[in-house]
Length: 130
Image 1 (cartoon, helix red, strand yellow):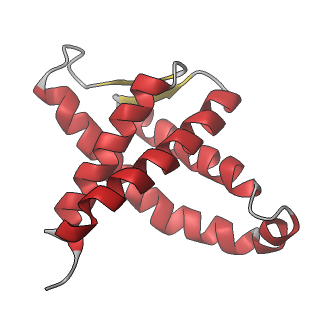
Image 2 (cartoon, rainbow, N blue to C red):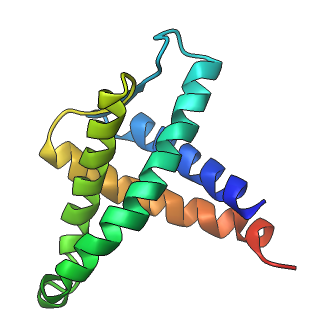
C-alpha cells in the first residue's frame, strides 16, 4: 500500500511540475493522452524513484564535501541531473519526459521537490505502519 501511495504522489508531483514549469513536458507512447498518459506518469515516477535511489545515492555520497561547502545548494543541480537521466531513459524507450534546457531542469527539480514534499505531508497518514 505504501509503495502505491508513494508512486501516486510521485506521479502527481511530476504532473503538477509539467503544469507549472513551461520547459518540461511529458508525452505518452501513443501521443493521444488519456489513460496512456496516466500510465506514463506512473512509469516516469517509478523510473525517477529507481534513478533517485540508485544513482542519486551514489552522486550524493560522492558530492558530500560539495554539499557541505555550499550548505546543500548543490542539491538543486544534482536533482536536475537526475531529472535529465530520467529524460534520457524515457526517451530511449520512446516516450516520456522532455526538458527544454538546463535551467528548466533546475526549476523543475525545485518544483518537483516542493510538490512531492507537500503531497507527502498530505498523504503521510496513509503511509504510516499500523
